[in-house]
Image (cartoon, rainbow, N blue to C red; front, side):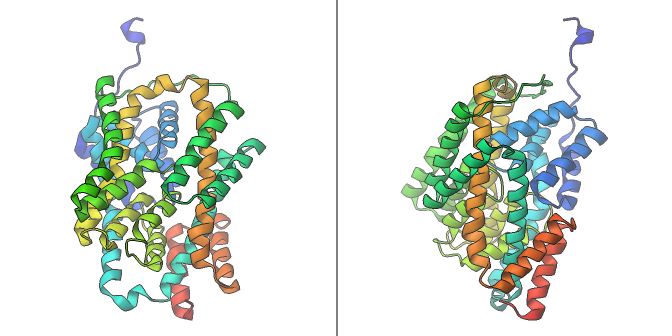
Length: 403
């Protein structure tokens, strides 16, 4: 092919430029992962022209396939494509830092002000969390389960997840979803894919993927043998970030299984989850809240940092390892069928998480149901910003003394 016909690799960006671009979004991007992906598209495809719309769609498809937070992984991928590994780190820091600081400060406030930690306003946060997860469930169900086969697969996955809670159940659901998708679902006709320019060699990508697997297996063994609280905390959050499909809402039961038996009050857990809806940026910064308030590790700012690094490190390793190999893998029909099955299984995991612990911990009376339903109406129909609904729900229960 003549040189003038070859696709040109876009010029790299300085890490500081990438950091500032994502910091602006980290301060303003409310609305959860679906909204975040739209913010990214407008900023980096339309306004800055960092990549084409088709290439952005391919990047999003990869991040939906990988375990972990899809919006954060998309941001890491954008930073990687524009500035290498430094650019990936800069993108993650800019997008994550504002909400991580806010969630850590909220955890310390709850920890040190005992009366505040048991206030009636916390019940409002839990009720709004019901509405937020219901909205996410509806949106994901419509997009990922548009036919009878995938809807049935999602319901079966929800039943299996309810009968087998914890990491083993999630793994079984994902694996069976992949097998069912491979043999029962037919992928749509494949479109022509735009190239993804990644300044990383395939050999380096394989090393990063091997590091992901080695840490997944080795960290629990190391933590069990050394008995170091910080290492145990890092290991548990690494497992959560590495094994969850579907993003922040699906990680809820996995994180609950990690921190509540270790000493955290379930009301505090759900209060933090509700507060995470009121801040911009990725929902996975909920890990900073849990690390700061957890009795399992060092707690405070150090615990927040350990938990945050633990839950996001798998995303770095997976995105940087998989992105250089992704274009070739996407051409295989078997891989695309399995991906359809995994996506349907993710909806089932979210459905099971919606029942327990979100619904069971919050809805105890017709009054609770009415407030959660009103919050869902505001979010889904009136399109009120999630942070405003969260603040309003907490204020209403505090004023009326509901708890």
